[in-house]
Image 1 (cartoon, helix red, strand yellow):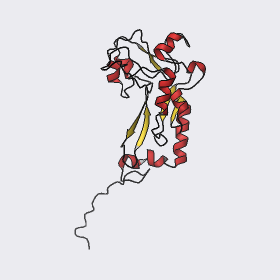
Image 2: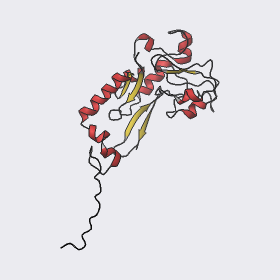
Image 3: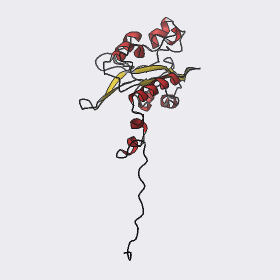
Image 4: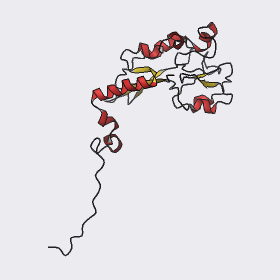
Length: 214
């Protein structure tokens, strides 16, 4: 069984936010919630990078660990989902998640606390697949239709990859090799900075006592 994963290629992301728009349109996301968002690092500085962030469907998900009512569960494809009928809106998951994936929906001027909402990898929820109840609570179940998440399909530069984790990893690995940055990205140069890529730091030699020698 494939394990579904997201990977965003920062070298390709152009901060167009098409992934964000596709997600909101596909699932009719409530106001105040962004299941996916684009974060820019070093904005306005040469070499800035953007990355599309959502729930990463962790293998050891911290949201599952802290939920006091155990509303989170993992599907056979490795997608982390939650049951809104069980959720009590305590917000523990929002504090535990390093990606800020679980969010409170907001309504009105100041916002109203309610059931948590998060990225579903376009795989719906515990309701019957394709049912009106599933769409109302969790959005469209594209995986049941044999499709990938809308955010990845709408990415104009194919920076956002989604699908079988092994396939996604192979695609990204091939890109890195074609860019000719394998040693630069993963070598000693990254770890130690001043050292040449893929070369271990030089070992210092002990000083030799030259006293009494001609």
